[in-house]
Length: 398
Image (cartoon, rainbow, N blue to C red; front, side, top):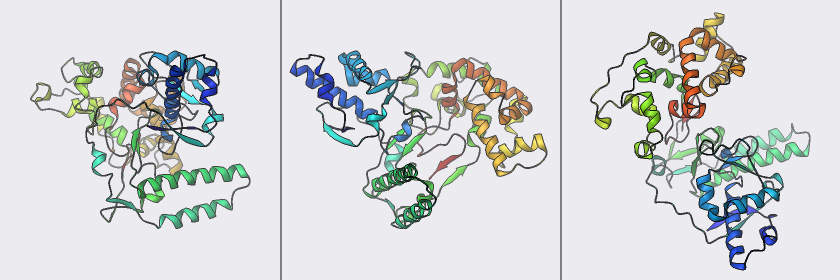
């Protein structure tokens, strides 16, 4: 198979001092190329990298790539300042995060052919496979739009670094658009925020109006406050307090079982939502009797059909928020859902308002997050699944 690696990475020179046999050198060299190709940033995988340049690579995959040379190769690449490993790695808890150093990441890339192949089972047809085909196209009008953006911004730039950033950004746009024009579709899941990225979602919003499927324009739907609304929809006292087959405790235990989730993970709902709404005989029950808590019901009765963020602001200040004020509350609510750092939460107005007007819900979130971790909590409450793109709050479905 062919892999993409930096053109300034001299692997034969790196491994020369290891004094390996000719046969062993060949295999080690190919393993290094394979590993490096996984941490090279491209327009297709850029969203898998965090703001510091690290991307997730779990031990299981590292073992598949490096097998018996696992320690030898990682130690070599670290000693030679080719890669860095994130110090926050926890065995069995948190995957490795690897960063390719800038001297290699920012260089041109070349293709290398290696004889190693991925040993993966044939994948089942997923939802996205049905739509990523020759029926999807992009109208040529995007070219004038790109030129207009470049000409407009170019006048405002004051130095060569700014111009380089602009050209790089536009270059990523054009590469993604070229993928659509040549039917080279791809999709993957980010290792940092677990959102699904694809050829479509990687395409900026301003160019989505040029997309057509079966000669018909696509429509983008934005579900307002979806994450908070979904949380309110699944809250009920009995679900979290009982030890029933469809209880929170049983679902958390079942998350560790691939057998339980293998038929669920490709659906549109997270395991928690599946357990809560599945009232048929999948788990041996015909119906669920819900015993609720009045504070959860109060949260569900919030005006989600209007705007929950503005609702919180109006409860506190008696007037509607400005656009900037609403945006600030929205940003804060993400910390309500995905962070359990008490000190930081105390500094945020959105968190303070939710704690003031929905204290029981805030306490519940913290209690569950403390028990299962913020990442597991976010996965449990996410809309998740195989939609082209699910936002942290507003779910955009092109």
